[in-house]
Length: 486
Ligand code: GLN
Image (cartoon, rainbow, N blue to C red; front, side):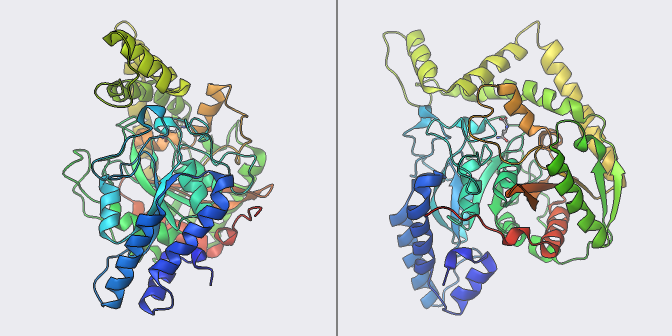
């Protein structure tokens, strides 16, 4: 039996009926990683011994009829930006090449408490900065649908691992699209929660006012189940909110007839690949067939979102990355004096994208420039937030493409940072406004997956999950999986 193709619900049922053991499931996943990850490079580290040891424990507990947790025996891959106790956490950077965290990120800790099995840590752009996973200091990850293409980024390893069935679910982080865009490129589901819904404690900070943690999975229900566990207030993240967490799984099967879906016209303008546009429009037609109301709306501030982000984000990055100096944090390159030590350590151990953003951030915050860049960008941020609030008075959900193109070839944007930044154009507004959004398989162009993005108002994860589920049930896309050359 091919156990790596089962959903969480199917696994749970199989465990309950003693059809297979946790050890068998974990062994199959580890075998798949062994066979395919040499080509994909989705993982930076795999921990077979501890995964199997944990599986044995769970099998014993199961046999003894003990309570084993809501996600017992569910294999999980974790983006290497999230701290895992005693397991290497590099954030894709040389400066953290040998870092062993003394504790788990809250999202990871909550999942462990519910019985997940961590298979390993997944590759990502250095400090989550990038859209292709090519900025990882440890080499790129390859797209399982076409090994000459990128998996998207920055959580490219997590998306590729789930798409290729090397893990059942995965965690990623999304600051401007880093869950949704790789989900789109790899043909899987990726959910970016409302800012404050999932604790950021133990997420290596990139741009703290945008950073979020969320799940990847092959089906909508699986993401709902992971969200159920990771959502909720955490005393160790002051920005996490006390609001009650909805029952996401129960929400999935509610009708979608009463929903109004807005299609923001600005998302279908220049720069969007014609075939992706076609696929997404067809995907949106499915909502009409499901009985929902679909209307055209306008988000006139969209053109400012990318510019505002690429001013505010580096400002936060420059502050957050200051700690990696070889003394307070990170690897050290010894030198004769303190200044030389800083120069060597940061000069040699940080990659060029990290350095570019530290410099940009330092610049936009410097006196004389603060008003014309940082302050203006914050004003734009408020205008964008207001635009969404206005739109959500009319509609329940916004439907858009996740990314302007399908997965692009490796190397095609690496020499032009601006063209790489443009990848975020449809995902970044959501982070600017702190809203929840999901990317789900919405069709194919040239045998490559296209992502459909559903954006909700703040705290409406259950609504976008419900609509995503209805769409998934009405379409075949989630059943397609990539076939990798053996
Ligand atoms: N492409 C975005 C960036 O480079 C993605 C960041 C993210 O979501 N982590 O900033």
